[in-house]
Length: 126
Image 1 (cartoon, rainbow, N blue to C red):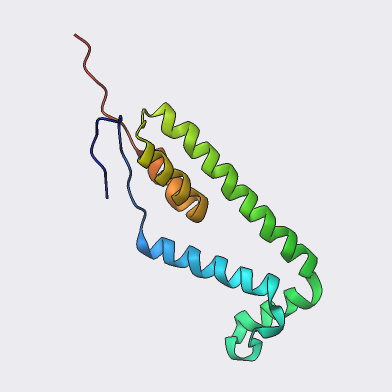
Image 2: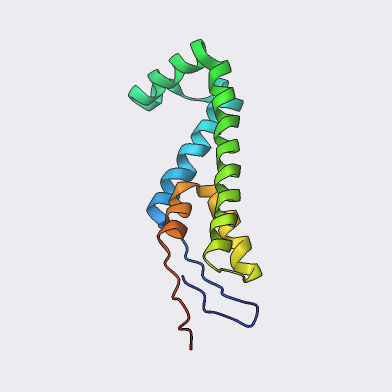
């Protein structure tokens, strides 16, 4: 969904791909479950994923926890970069700015790649 330019400035925003967002949501949800509630995971019911997850929980839980917070830190960094990029591309509308920040925070590169690919139309100088 692309927003049109409004009185508040250039308002370009495009929602990302639902399949990508679904994969990211499920993966981060599973990662959250593994880090915070590993005792409740039905490892035997998850096949190879369960076996691998149980190995990681039993042998590398500190690394999993550190990686979890590092992943969120990277998402914050991508969101901040999206704000710089958005400004550089001339997107000034307040709602569009907020949407880019939130979408990039939650879905990372799946959102940021859309903003990177955006080529604003340049105004002709007379």
